[in-house]
Image 1 (tube, one colour):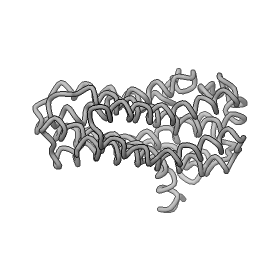
Image 2 (cartoon, one colour):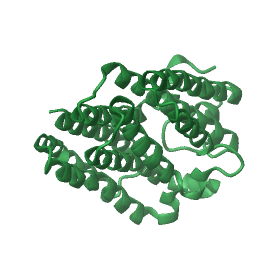
Image 3 (cartoon, helix red, strand yellow):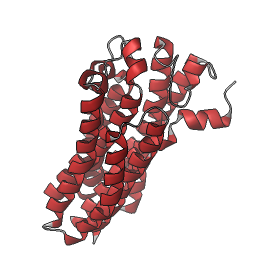
Image 4 (tube, rainbow, N blue to C red):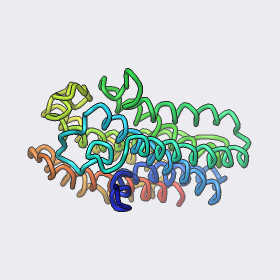
Length: 289
């Protein structure tokens, strides 16, 4: 039987900054537009975190029942390791999606943006079919597309819009930057799993690109957001705070291009999550100031 610690690990805490970061920078953009709201920001954060946990449990379930996680170099999964029954993990995923839906409805009611309910429903569908269903798009190398759209553009711009009822070019630039770092999280995770995913028939973008090009892709995904921050700084000088992250980006790039493998990449995964969180905090603060 899975322990509490197993469930915490199954929730993949290292990935949760990918949920918080877009809310932070999106809220900064809303304040820049003169209409920030702490309550709506907290609700957006709840939606994002619940969706992130839900997709993590959904992936655990779907990969586990397919046998993709039978051999892993990373932390064991609940379903694949047999620590929890598949049905229990699936129910945990849908409970998380349900919580996200409730919080999202409250947010839409406060903001008067009922049309965003349809966007939220699409987010849940995308979360499930990333590795679920008969033809999951994550197995066809399209996982990064889903992450960029939903954990980058939708999460960031949705946060800004539900507070300010408008978006700005700075919010859009921030959303692209957040989306790219979120993609980098997925890329480095999949670089680590190239050997096992290849055997299991999981054709992630990393598998399709091959090890070297996937690593170069990761570096581009963590570097371009800093260039976008410079562009934002042309009108919002405090956005230059984001350049404090340059040493971290350089270190991550060196480790990944240096050929880190297996468990070494788990540290990169953790630090990439911290990079995304730092980007959300610093760029959001730059827009707020």
